[in-house]
Length: 459
Figure 1 (cartoon, rainbow, N blue to C red):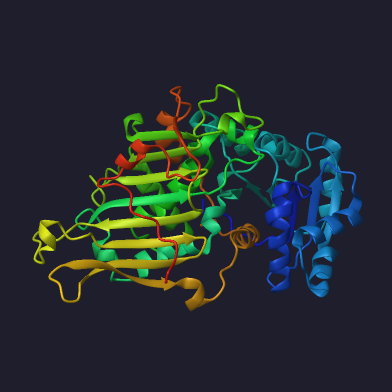
Figure 2: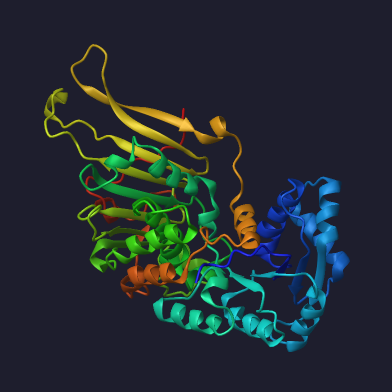
């Protein structure tokens, strides 16, 4: 079967009064409406007593400074079905509210524990027919629970009518990686083990877990960002060119490369926990949950065999940044002295956030001297190309249109859990590190030659 790409006639948003809707979904729907890209009924479902007028005021507050005309259009599309997600009467009222609105997209911005109950409730009223189900992450807690959850959802929606959100896939700079790889013949011929020595992926956050101690302590860094966001990023960086522009062809290539990634060896992992984490509300006093991880992954295929893919992520680090650094192999002979030291390697840097761009670290001769130094050649995408679309605008647009390429197909989810399974719930206490540092000292040994310094500007 081909993925269903039927365009929706209405959006059903479960959890419309929750944090995700307030922070991300409602502002994205407003921007889409203001730009003329969205004009559909939005049926909110929530366990609430606020009423429709209350919901509209909630949405106005969530969207911040708004144009009255654009917001009035969004507000006019809103309706509300209030009720418990486990109560069949809620879904009976939803069926009445959606009558005659055509193909439905059911977007579940609710805790994963409710996914199966909502899917069953929809099916009980026939609302799984002519409909798509969109679920937020996390999809499972490990490989076994992901398979169990998938089996539950498949009772009511087949794979072609399921969409699993990973909002990283909606980020425009992430999609730019595909363009850089496959639209530029400057890069593609060298994007392999013959020319690349290592690839480093850093996702750093300068804040701690804040008021999310209970959630974070049950998950940790590997579950929170590595299994989903960063392995999806690895798949985009490492995949072979798809044989066509068909969405399924792209997803197939991502699956092939993830299938070739070895399960992570615990010996290739350094876990850390920042000082003061154990005093956070909701965190167990004897917690061994990591707030930092650095690891090496290897891909057993012809393109990447032997090349270490080094990933690090953590809370309480010096900066908030997402960057990929590909280190090229050095020339076989050093011709420019440098006092007997080898030349610095060429680097290709893809900066994804907070601002997006690319930098090539090339070598130039130091004036008046007989040695070289790195010279950055940079492009700031925002300055050159203008503002970029927000991730959830793209997620919602694709949920409505049915395009599956920016969602995670289950076989990709399954491979991602397989890859990290050996390093989930390790019982050894993570190594301590101070907030504002780059994590525990031994993490510096994960990449060959150490981590490259993160760029903080394109100037």
